[in-house]
Amino acid sequence: MKSALYISLSVAWLLLTWRSATIAAQAEDNRSCRPLQIHLALTGDPTEMRVMWKTKKKGCRSALQYSKHLELLMAGNGILARSDAEETYGPEDMCGSPASGFDFSHLHLHSTVLTDLDPGQVHHYRIGEDGDTHHFTAAQAPDPRGGMTFLVFGDMGESEHHRAKSPGAHYTATQLKSEVLDHNADMLLHIGDISYANGDPKIWDTFMDQIEPYAAAAPYMIGIGNHEYDYRTGKEHHHEGAGSDPSGEDKPYDPDWGNYGNDSGGECGVTVSKRFKMPGYHSGAANHHEHEANSPFWYSFEYGSVHFTIISTEHDLSHGSEQNKWLRQDLESVDRCTTPWLIVGMHRPMYVVFPHKSNRVVGRHMRGFLEELFDANEVDMVLSGHVHAYARTCNVYDERCVDSGSGGMTHVTLGCGGRKLSDVEHEQPEWLDSAAREWGYGRVQVVDGQEMLFEFVESETGEVFDSVRLENSRSRSRTCLDGELRDWLLQEAWMHDLHGAPAMHLHSIWDLAPSNLYH
Image (cartoon, rainbow, N blue to C red; front, side, top):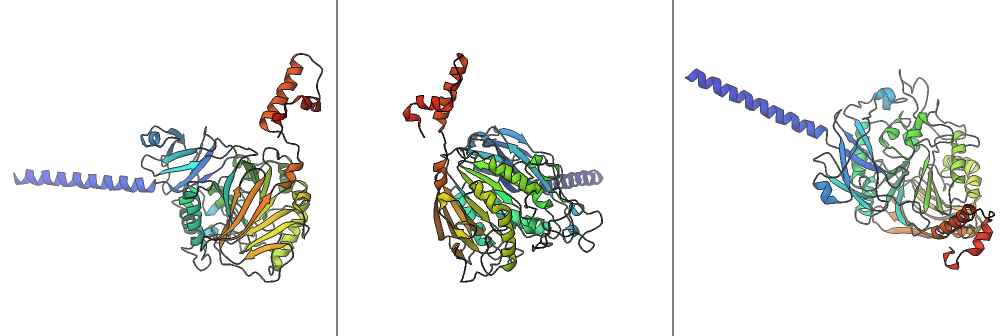
């Protein structure tokens, strides 16, 4: 009797132990598959939004549901979107040390594109059955009357591991979270020098955790900086079985007039190309062809009344270079009647404040490569980082302030997102309108295709330090038709052709147009 009772109790204990172990294993499995570091990106199509996240475990079933209606999503009746093939990277992918010496296990990256979105409308989404619910506003379709607010900054880092080197990152992150969640900013643009990780996955994780609260609610677009890409070749930097440069180059860009080095610590763009998929990434990296985007290194997209062009100052931009050819084609192809504003993002600035001598040399060469091209294509604003301070020029061309109606553009340096600040001398060139040695970011309110307000916001206080209102004066010289008039003209031309009437010149049809349709 005692023996039977003992056996029964032993079996019960074993079953309880097994069940407890199973439950614990399932709980650990769920934790390992929990979506982390969620962030969004535009695809270039306003009916789409890309969602990216990380899991600690390989092979997690990462199904995402989304809907315009929160109640449908909560009931499990949202639209199902399966993630793309899982991605990861390891020491063998890095171009050199110290990045090649880290452990990249527990790093599994997922991505999916949400489709059939209503541009400009709020959509809700959730990753997994037990994931948190997030929401975002889908991008606006290109529209000359479209307004938007975007936030722009560079050189941020994170304050947990690198508090001494990035003491302002926490302040900026706090303000950006408020701008997106409380004031509905539409988009963020981080123009290079992102985490300063030098390949360390712990630093990248901390940075991605830092931005998730707002990057999961608004697209987080990036540009390439020296701390994401610059690397060295040679025995002292390379390792056996080193990976290849994901931008497709066979060696790093290192002109004799530059101050390029091993600033990425051997990452050579691998990490950002895996973690941040920007518009055109399918044709980007080593798979791109001439005159195609090389995302995330150079690419473009449109949002409302703005065409954004993002380029890499860590790659060759000289005349005849691959990037310069793409850039020329991109700028020349912009329909300024649909997107009247043209904004360029590039990490290293063309106009550099004193005393940054080596950066001023690089800026002079950048102006030689780009300024005439930008002016010919009527670029309105150039946004940069790299120099750890704030600076804004007048409407400038060839180091002279000029009337905006006759050319030139405004350059803004925003390398003050959180990294230790640089000096700014009191005496500066005449083209400088404003400068500050403060952590902060730019808040750009695009009213429509004619008016834009730029504000520099201090991260510690949330106060506006500097502002300028830009008017698109050159757009008035463009012959643009509004949508209704354009449709009317096309219909008239089609009707004449349909009835076999002699072809009419555009100006002849124009004379017949109702006066209420003029732009």
